[in-house]
Image 1 (cartoon, rainbow, N blue to C red):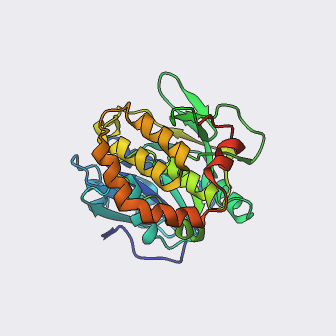
Image 2: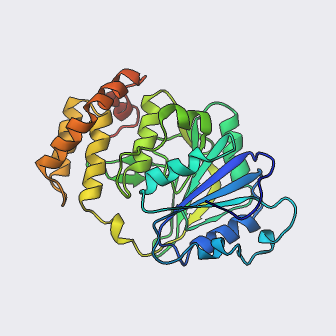
Image 3: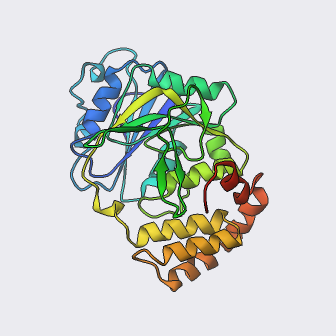
Amino acid sequence: MFYLEKEKKCPRVSLIIPCRDERYYIRQTLQHILNVPAGASYEIIVVDDGSGDGCCNFLRRGKLDTPEASDTPGRPTIHLLTTSGLGVARARNLGAALARAPHLVFCDAHIIVSPGWLGGLIDSLEKGMFAAVCPGITFTGPLFYTVYGGTWNESLSWVGIREQPTGLQEIPLAPSGCLAVRKDVFRNVGGFEDGFRLWGYDDAEFSLKLWLFGFRVAVHPLVRIFHVARPTPKYQLWGEHLVFNLLLMGLLHFSGHRLAKTVALAKSFPGFTPALYTQLFLKNGARRRKYMRRRVFNDDWFMKRFNIPL
């Protein structure tokens, strides 16, 4: 573990940024965050999860090349954790385990934030109506569009909600590109699914779990961040790890008929084998039963509540 600065008074927010091979983005993201008024005190926890491109070496050297990174009073503390490749869900959980603040904000390593962004998200949490809140996220690149949370289609593919609400509004799925959650709630539900591999379905499963366990998820449309376009890493392409995560999510949370539909969908993707599903079922059957007993609402309620055709 590396600390860019000594510990300070407990901040209001712990900002957790997992990264893997983000050489051209993580420094830019941190510089921008530090240069924009956040509206809340915060610490930053960067989890370098097995990068091979040296993207966080500048943090190891203690150099951010920004005025806020100099030895001045009041600057946020930056912690750097180095892991050997936990996957994004477990990397977030590790950062959360070391967080000191009562609120957690998970971010991607390639974003641009707007003034007051943290304050807007955390104020929404502190009102007590919602356990997790995301901002409107504008995706840069050729299409350049904004989403206000997401939902699923009949193939369990994530679909962004394009219609802008006038105020805080419930949404089925909050993207982890920027997601604020109360730390007590995060611990209550067990965080992100630590059985997941690499990447995929991690934020969708987390939002689903929050709803099924009785917590509400919302978007704050007046808070906006930009998600910077970059080439898609190989590990984010369809393969066995995505099929694995899809099956595990269905196994943990879906009723029998919906689980059967999920297995049928998984069969159409590269990487599916009957042995993979059997292995997952044998390993996670007890946890499935535990989750079914724990939840306040069932998956039928969730799909009907948000008009998801599955």
